[in-house]
Amino acid sequence: MDFDLTEAQRDLAALTGAIAASAGDSLWTDLARAGVLAAGLPERAGGDGYGVLERCAVLVELGRAAAPVPYLPSIATAAAALARFGTDAQVARWAAPAGRGEVVLTAADGAFDAAGGRLSGTATAVPALPAAAAVLVPTGAGVFVVTPTDEGVTVAAQDVAGGPGAGQLTLDAVPVDDDRLLGGAEGGAEVSEWLRAHATVGACAAQLGVCERALELTAEYARTRVQFGRAIGSFQAVAQRLADAYIDVAAIRLTLWHAAWRLSEGLPCAREVSTAKFWAADAGHRVAHTAVHVHGGVGIDLSAPVHRYFLAAKYHEFTSGGATAHLRALGTRLS
Image (cartoon, rainbow, N blue to C red; front, side, top):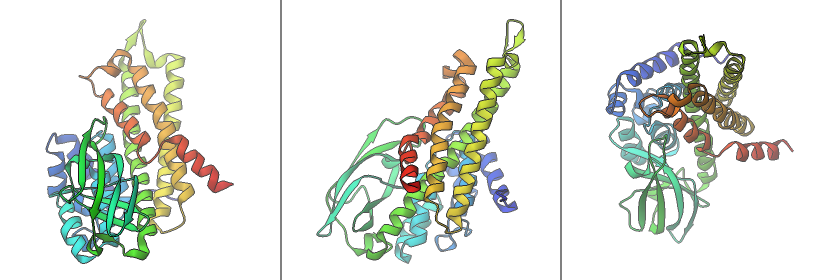
Protein backbone atom coordinates (compact mmCIF):
# COMPACT_ATOMS: atom_id res chain seq x y z
CA MET A 1 0.00 0.00 0.00
CA ASP A 2 1.37 3.40 -0.99
CA PHE A 3 1.13 6.09 1.69
CA ASP A 4 3.20 8.68 -0.17
CA LEU A 5 1.72 12.17 -0.02
CA THR A 6 0.25 13.70 -3.14
CA GLU A 7 1.83 16.78 -4.67
CA ALA A 8 -0.84 19.00 -3.11
CA GLN A 9 -0.28 17.45 0.30
CA ARG A 10 3.48 17.85 0.00
CA ASP A 11 3.07 21.50 -1.01
CA LEU A 12 0.80 22.18 1.96
CA ALA A 13 3.25 20.47 4.29
CA ALA A 14 6.19 22.40 2.84
CA LEU A 15 4.36 25.71 3.24
CA THR A 16 3.50 24.87 6.85
CA GLY A 17 7.07 23.83 7.59
CA ALA A 18 8.51 27.01 6.08
CA ILE A 19 6.16 29.22 8.09
CA ALA A 20 6.77 27.28 11.31
CA ALA A 21 10.53 27.55 10.84
CA SER A 22 10.51 31.32 10.38
CA ALA A 23 7.61 32.56 12.51
CA GLY A 24 7.70 33.24 16.22
CA ASP A 25 4.80 34.44 18.31
CA SER A 26 2.94 35.31 15.11
CA LEU A 27 2.82 31.70 13.88
CA TRP A 28 -0.94 31.29 14.22
CA THR A 29 -1.59 34.57 12.41
CA ASP A 30 0.92 33.69 9.71
CA LEU A 31 -0.68 30.28 9.16
CA ALA A 32 -4.08 31.92 8.79
CA ARG A 33 -2.77 34.60 6.43
CA ALA A 34 -1.13 31.96 4.23
CA GLY A 35 -4.38 29.98 4.03
CA VAL A 36 -3.04 26.95 5.88
CA LEU A 37 -5.85 26.95 8.46
CA ALA A 38 -8.63 27.23 5.90
CA ALA A 39 -6.99 24.69 3.58
CA GLY A 40 -7.78 21.89 6.02
CA LEU A 41 -11.54 22.55 5.87
CA PRO A 42 -14.26 21.63 3.36
CA GLU A 43 -15.31 24.20 0.80
CA ARG A 44 -18.54 25.01 2.67
CA ALA A 45 -16.35 26.42 5.46
CA GLY A 46 -14.27 28.50 3.06
CA GLY A 47 -11.55 25.87 2.71
CA ASP A 48 -9.95 24.06 -0.19
CA GLY A 49 -11.92 20.87 0.36
CA TYR A 50 -8.99 19.01 1.89
CA GLY A 51 -9.49 16.30 4.49
CA VAL A 52 -7.81 14.30 7.21
CA LEU A 53 -4.70 13.40 5.19
CA GLU A 54 -3.92 17.05 4.48
CA ARG A 55 -4.59 18.01 8.09
CA CYS A 56 -2.22 15.26 9.23
CA ALA A 57 0.44 16.57 6.85
CA VAL A 58 0.10 20.00 8.49
CA LEU A 59 0.22 18.49 11.98
CA VAL A 60 3.41 16.58 11.22
CA GLU A 61 5.13 19.84 10.26
CA LEU A 62 3.80 21.67 13.31
CA GLY A 63 5.07 18.77 15.41
CA ARG A 64 8.50 19.09 13.82
CA ALA A 65 8.56 22.67 15.06
CA ALA A 66 7.10 21.70 18.47
CA ALA A 67 4.72 24.57 17.81
CA PRO A 68 2.17 25.07 20.65
CA VAL A 69 -0.56 26.34 18.34
CA PRO A 70 -4.16 25.03 18.56
CA TYR A 71 -4.37 23.53 15.06
CA LEU A 72 -5.37 20.08 16.35
CA PRO A 73 -8.26 21.12 18.62
CA SER A 74 -9.42 24.12 16.59
CA ILE A 75 -9.06 23.09 12.94
CA ALA A 76 -8.46 19.34 12.72
CA THR A 77 -11.11 18.50 15.31
CA ALA A 78 -13.76 21.13 16.11
CA ALA A 79 -13.89 23.23 12.93
CA ALA A 80 -13.62 20.16 10.70
CA ALA A 81 -16.49 18.52 12.61
CA LEU A 82 -18.64 21.64 12.31
CA ALA A 83 -17.90 21.82 8.60
CA ARG A 84 -18.79 18.13 8.22
CA PHE A 85 -21.94 17.92 10.36
CA GLY A 86 -23.02 21.49 11.10
CA THR A 87 -25.84 23.55 9.66
CA ASP A 88 -25.07 26.46 7.37
CA ALA A 89 -25.59 28.82 10.29
CA GLN A 90 -23.20 26.85 12.53
CA VAL A 91 -20.56 26.75 9.81
CA ALA A 92 -20.85 30.49 9.20
CA ARG A 93 -20.76 31.34 12.89
CA TRP A 94 -17.89 29.12 14.02
CA ALA A 95 -16.13 26.97 11.41
CA ALA A 96 -15.48 29.61 8.76
CA PRO A 97 -14.08 32.18 11.23
CA ALA A 98 -11.85 29.46 12.70
CA GLY A 99 -10.44 28.79 9.23
CA ARG A 100 -9.60 32.48 8.94
CA GLY A 101 -7.86 32.41 12.32
CA GLU A 102 -10.39 34.79 13.82
CA VAL A 103 -11.53 32.41 16.59
CA VAL A 104 -10.20 29.28 18.28
CA LEU A 105 -12.45 26.26 18.78
CA THR A 106 -12.02 23.07 20.78
CA ALA A 107 -13.79 19.88 21.84
CA ALA A 108 -14.23 18.48 25.33
CA ASP A 109 -13.98 14.86 26.41
CA GLY A 110 -15.71 14.39 29.74
CA ALA A 111 -18.84 13.18 31.50
CA PHE A 112 -21.67 15.45 30.35
CA ASP A 113 -25.40 14.92 30.68
CA ALA A 114 -28.21 16.52 28.68
CA ALA A 115 -31.60 16.63 30.33
CA GLY A 116 -34.49 19.00 29.84
CA GLY A 117 -32.58 21.13 27.38
CA ARG A 118 -29.73 21.73 29.83
CA LEU A 119 -26.14 20.43 29.96
CA SER A 120 -24.19 19.56 33.08
CA GLY A 121 -20.80 17.99 33.70
CA THR A 122 -17.07 18.63 33.91
CA ALA A 123 -14.03 17.99 31.73
CA THR A 124 -10.42 18.69 32.62
CA ALA A 125 -7.42 19.40 30.39
CA VAL A 126 -9.60 20.58 27.51
CA PRO A 127 -7.04 21.74 24.91
CA ALA A 128 -6.86 25.46 24.09
CA LEU A 129 -9.91 26.06 26.28
CA PRO A 130 -8.88 29.40 27.78
CA ALA A 131 -8.66 30.88 24.27
CA ALA A 132 -11.66 29.05 22.78
CA ALA A 133 -14.71 30.91 21.53
CA ALA A 134 -16.77 27.71 21.40
CA VAL A 135 -16.52 24.13 22.66
CA LEU A 136 -18.04 20.96 21.24
CA VAL A 137 -19.53 18.94 24.10
CA PRO A 138 -20.47 15.28 23.49
CA THR A 139 -23.42 13.91 25.48
CA GLY A 140 -25.71 10.92 25.24
CA ALA A 141 -28.26 13.15 23.53
CA GLY A 142 -25.84 14.46 20.90
CA VAL A 143 -22.95 16.88 20.50
CA PHE A 144 -23.69 20.47 21.48
CA VAL A 145 -21.83 23.73 20.89
CA VAL A 146 -21.38 25.90 23.99
CA THR A 147 -19.49 29.14 24.49
CA PRO A 148 -17.67 30.45 27.58
CA THR A 149 -20.17 33.30 27.80
CA ASP A 150 -23.20 31.01 28.03
CA GLU A 151 -25.16 30.94 31.27
CA GLY A 152 -23.80 28.25 33.60
CA VAL A 153 -20.42 27.84 31.85
CA THR A 154 -17.25 28.11 33.92
CA VAL A 155 -13.75 27.99 32.43
CA ALA A 156 -10.64 27.68 34.59
CA ALA A 157 -7.15 27.72 33.09
CA GLN A 158 -4.88 24.77 33.90
CA ASP A 159 -1.11 24.40 33.69
CA VAL A 160 -0.35 21.89 30.93
CA ALA A 161 3.09 21.95 29.30
CA GLY A 162 3.92 21.04 25.73
CA GLY A 163 0.64 21.99 24.06
CA PRO A 164 -1.63 24.93 23.24
CA GLY A 165 -2.80 25.46 26.81
CA ALA A 166 -5.69 23.76 28.55
CA GLY A 167 -8.52 24.37 30.96
CA GLN A 168 -11.27 22.84 33.02
CA LEU A 169 -14.78 23.17 31.63
CA THR A 170 -17.71 23.04 34.04
CA LEU A 171 -21.30 23.14 32.82
CA ASP A 172 -24.03 23.80 35.38
CA ALA A 173 -27.45 23.41 33.80
CA VAL A 174 -26.39 25.28 30.67
CA PRO A 175 -29.45 25.95 28.48
CA VAL A 176 -29.17 24.75 24.88
CA ASP A 177 -31.55 24.31 21.98
CA ASP A 178 -31.48 22.70 18.55
CA ASP A 179 -29.42 25.59 17.19
CA ARG A 180 -26.57 24.30 19.34
CA LEU A 181 -26.98 20.63 18.38
CA LEU A 182 -24.41 19.33 15.91
CA GLY A 183 -25.51 16.69 13.41
CA GLY A 184 -29.07 16.46 14.66
CA ALA A 185 -30.52 14.32 17.43
CA GLU A 186 -29.99 11.10 15.47
CA GLY A 187 -26.36 11.82 14.62
CA GLY A 188 -24.92 12.27 18.09
CA ALA A 189 -23.10 8.93 18.23
CA GLU A 190 -21.64 9.41 14.76
CA VAL A 191 -20.38 12.90 15.56
CA SER A 192 -18.86 11.77 18.87
CA GLU A 193 -17.07 8.88 17.19
CA TRP A 194 -15.86 11.19 14.40
CA LEU A 195 -14.48 13.68 16.92
CA ARG A 196 -12.68 10.98 18.89
CA ALA A 197 -11.12 9.34 15.83
CA HIS A 198 -9.94 12.58 14.22
CA ALA A 199 -8.56 13.99 17.47
CA THR A 200 -6.65 10.75 18.09
CA VAL A 201 -5.20 10.48 14.59
CA GLY A 202 -4.27 14.17 14.71
CA ALA A 203 -2.37 13.64 17.95
CA CYS A 204 -0.47 10.77 16.30
CA ALA A 205 0.46 13.01 13.36
CA ALA A 206 1.77 15.73 15.64
CA GLN A 207 3.70 13.13 17.62
CA LEU A 208 5.30 11.83 14.43
CA GLY A 209 6.63 15.29 13.64
CA VAL A 210 7.90 15.78 17.18
CA CYS A 211 9.72 12.44 17.21
CA GLU A 212 11.16 12.86 13.71
CA ARG A 213 12.75 16.17 14.59
CA ALA A 214 13.84 15.08 18.06
CA LEU A 215 15.68 12.12 16.51
CA GLU A 216 17.32 14.36 13.90
CA LEU A 217 18.55 16.76 16.58
CA THR A 218 19.82 13.87 18.68
CA ALA A 219 21.63 12.18 15.80
CA GLU A 220 23.33 15.45 14.88
CA TYR A 221 24.38 16.00 18.49
CA ALA A 222 25.79 12.45 18.67
CA ARG A 223 27.85 13.12 15.54
CA THR A 224 29.37 16.34 16.85
CA ARG A 225 29.65 15.86 20.63
CA VAL A 226 33.12 14.55 21.42
CA GLN A 227 33.87 12.68 24.64
CA PHE A 228 37.01 10.70 25.45
CA GLY A 229 38.40 11.77 22.10
CA ARG A 230 35.52 10.30 20.08
CA ALA A 231 32.12 11.40 18.86
CA ILE A 232 29.60 9.90 21.28
CA GLY A 233 27.65 8.48 18.35
CA SER A 234 30.51 6.03 17.81
CA PHE A 235 29.89 4.38 21.18
CA GLN A 236 27.91 1.17 20.79
CA ALA A 237 25.34 1.95 23.48
CA VAL A 238 24.53 5.36 21.96
CA ALA A 239 24.38 3.94 18.43
CA GLN A 240 22.00 1.19 19.56
CA ARG A 241 19.80 3.70 21.36
CA LEU A 242 19.55 5.81 18.21
CA ALA A 243 18.85 2.73 16.07
CA ASP A 244 15.98 1.77 18.36
CA ALA A 245 14.61 5.31 18.13
CA TYR A 246 14.81 5.15 14.33
CA ILE A 247 12.68 1.98 14.34
CA ASP A 248 10.21 3.56 16.76
CA VAL A 249 9.78 6.62 14.53
CA ALA A 250 9.24 4.36 11.51
CA ALA A 251 6.54 2.48 13.43
CA ILE A 252 4.79 5.71 14.42
CA ARG A 253 4.89 6.84 10.79
CA LEU A 254 3.51 3.60 9.34
CA THR A 255 0.70 3.15 11.84
CA LEU A 256 -0.31 6.82 11.62
CA TRP A 257 -0.69 6.89 7.85
CA HIS A 258 -2.45 3.53 7.82
CA ALA A 259 -5.05 4.80 10.31
CA ALA A 260 -5.35 8.19 8.59
CA TRP A 261 -5.85 6.59 5.18
CA ARG A 262 -8.63 4.29 6.41
CA LEU A 263 -10.25 7.23 8.21
CA SER A 264 -10.10 9.33 5.03
CA GLU A 265 -11.70 6.53 3.02
CA GLY A 266 -14.57 6.06 5.46
CA LEU A 267 -13.44 2.50 6.24
CA PRO A 268 -13.73 0.86 9.67
CA CYS A 269 -10.60 1.98 11.50
CA ALA A 270 -11.09 1.68 15.26
CA ARG A 271 -8.36 -0.96 15.55
CA GLU A 272 -5.99 0.98 13.31
CA VAL A 273 -6.55 4.21 15.26
CA SER A 274 -5.85 2.48 18.58
CA THR A 275 -2.76 0.82 17.08
CA ALA A 276 -1.47 4.17 15.85
CA LYS A 277 -2.08 5.84 19.21
CA PHE A 278 -0.39 3.01 21.08
CA TRP A 279 2.74 3.48 18.98
CA ALA A 280 2.58 7.27 19.17
CA ALA A 281 2.38 7.07 22.96
CA ASP A 282 4.65 4.12 23.73
CA ALA A 283 7.33 4.71 21.10
CA GLY A 284 7.03 8.48 21.49
CA HIS A 285 7.88 8.07 25.16
CA ARG A 286 11.03 6.13 24.29
CA VAL A 287 12.15 8.56 21.59
CA ALA A 288 11.66 11.56 23.87
CA HIS A 289 13.70 9.99 26.65
CA THR A 290 16.40 8.93 24.20
CA ALA A 291 16.72 12.53 23.00
CA VAL A 292 17.16 13.85 26.53
CA HIS A 293 19.51 11.08 27.67
CA VAL A 294 21.85 11.31 24.67
CA HIS A 295 21.98 15.10 24.99
CA GLY A 296 22.88 14.78 28.65
CA GLY A 297 22.67 18.06 30.54
CA VAL A 298 21.87 19.90 27.31
CA GLY A 299 18.66 17.89 27.13
CA ILE A 300 17.18 19.76 30.09
CA ASP A 301 18.77 23.14 29.37
CA LEU A 302 16.02 25.65 28.66
CA SER A 303 18.30 27.51 26.25
CA ALA A 304 18.46 24.42 23.99
CA PRO A 305 15.52 23.17 21.91
CA VAL A 306 15.45 19.54 23.07
CA HIS A 307 13.37 20.18 26.19
CA ARG A 308 10.55 21.57 24.01
CA TYR A 309 10.40 18.32 22.07
CA PHE A 310 10.36 16.29 25.27
CA LEU A 311 7.42 18.31 26.60
CA ALA A 312 5.58 18.13 23.27
CA ALA A 313 6.12 14.37 23.07
CA LYS A 314 4.71 13.89 26.57
CA TYR A 315 1.74 16.10 25.72
CA HIS A 316 0.86 14.11 22.59
CA GLU A 317 1.56 10.84 24.39
CA PHE A 318 -1.44 11.37 26.64
CA THR A 319 -3.71 13.38 24.33
CA SER A 320 -6.75 11.24 23.44
CA GLY A 321 -5.57 8.50 25.80
CA GLY A 322 -2.22 6.93 26.59
CA ALA A 323 -0.61 3.68 25.47
CA THR A 324 -2.28 1.46 28.09
CA ALA A 325 -5.78 2.74 27.36
CA HIS A 326 -5.44 2.12 23.64
CA LEU A 327 -3.77 -1.26 24.09
CA ARG A 328 -6.72 -2.34 26.23
CA ALA A 329 -9.15 -0.98 23.67
CA LEU A 330 -7.30 -2.84 20.93
CA GLY A 331 -7.37 -6.05 22.95
CA THR A 332 -11.11 -5.72 23.45
CA ARG A 333 -11.70 -5.24 19.73
CA LEU A 334 -9.52 -8.23 18.85
CA SER A 335 -11.09 -10.60 21.40
